[in-house]
Image (cartoon, rainbow, N blue to C red):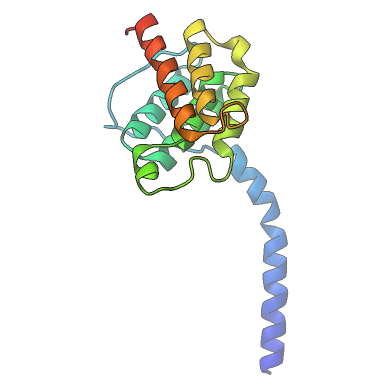
Length: 173
């Protein structure tokens, strides 16, 4: 009797695994995030023509600055789902996946799965659609991930800092 129950359980588990294959695809087409009321009002206008994508981009920035990185990444992913050709959504993902004071303090690797590098490369692939400021932000963040050109982490950090200082002088607002 116990063997029959174990056999039936195994069969049911196998069939349930096959039955879920379609839902995985469906889930990838569903929303990654929702707009959270009360998360702030700061907006950094980007060149998207999609107001919802802009709203998710802004929320992603606010969440990243609040160290809510998984939620931030989900917001940028939702913005990219709504406007897949815009480079700044991928810049946002790379920004949220990149090094931060907490990860550095804990001596965690900067991009352990390489997802930040993939995101910034997607932004670079779309850089011709960016405004001059957006293109410079993308190029500056790429420096932080570019271990091929600058293998030393401290040198990459310094190069990123230099690029961002230059951007701050050129675009003070």
